Length: 409
Image (cartoon, rainbow, N blue to C red):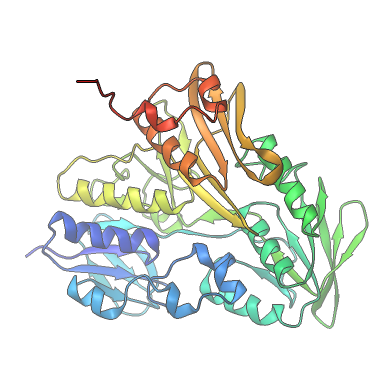
C-alpha cells in the first residue's frame, strides 16, 4: 500500500485537488490539512455578502462532513505543518507527529500583507473567516471608516460599508484605483462609481502612521501630514504567498512556489496549486494569479498529473469583483494593449471594453454584461479572430464567431 497523498492547505485549491484526485481514480488514503479551525469555506463572499449579513458562516462551507466522508477525504482542521522533509517524503506536524506521503500537494494560499504600525485596536486585515467575523462586529459601532488600499478587496469592503451607511475614505498610494489589475479606463469608471456613492478617495497618498487613544486607532496620518479620522481601519494592500514551507524544504520559489502548467514543482513528488504559486510561462516569465479559477484549474492539473495524465492549465485567466450593483468580470489581460474599444453604455455602468495588441484580442473587462464575458472566454481560449470594429458593433453577435455556419437546403 502506498502512503497517503497529503494536501497542505484546506482552501479552494486544496479541497479541489482532493476531489479531483478522487475523480481521477486515486483509491488510496487522502489527507487534507487545514491550519484554520474551520472546514473548507468559500473566501470570495467574505468581503461581500458575509459582511453585509446576507450569508452566514455555515453557508460559506464548501462541503459538509457527509460529502467529505463519501469521498473518503480525511480533513484535519487546526493542523499546522511545521516542516517538510522531501528526502524522506515526510510532513512534520506541529502537534500530531508526522505523515509520510506518496505525493504532496501544497495549497498553502496567501496571507494579507501587513502594514507597519498597524497593531492598534480597530485596525484589521481582511483575509480569513475569523478576520471578517471580528470586522463585522466592529462595524456595528464604527462611524468613520478608512480603507487603506484601493484594490479589489479594499473597494469591495468600501462598497459594503457605504451600503451600511458608514462614512468611508479610501487611501491609495497609486494615482488610480486597482492599478495593478485593470486599465486606466476601468479605474476611472470605478472612481466615478465610488464617488457617486459617497466614498472619499485620496489617491496618490501614502500612510505615515496612525493616531490613537488608549491603544485604539483614532485616525490615519498621511504622507502630506494630514490626518483622516477613523474609528475603524481596514488594511487591504495585497497578499504574500505562503511559500515558506516549500522554500525551507528546498523547493524552488520566487514570489510563490514555482510551478509549470501541470502544477509540478522542482521536486518530482511535490505539486502546488492556488494562491501560493507562481506559474512559469513558455517565455520564461512567472505569472501569479489570485483567483477562484486559478485555484480550481491548477488543482485539477495537479491531480491529473499525479495520476499520470496530461491536462495542463492553459485557459485564459478570469476574475470578478462585485461592488454595489456593478459586477466587473475580466478575462485575459489589458496589460500591453495598444488599442481598445467600448461595447455598450459606459455612463450606465453597463458596457465591455475590449483590448487589442495589434490585431489580436488579449482581454475583455465587462461591467454588468455577463454575456460578453462568457463569449470572451471562448474567444480567447479558442484563439478566434475578433476585430475592433466587430467588438464595438452591438449589432454583431459575438457568438457568430464560434457557432458553425449553416447552409440553406
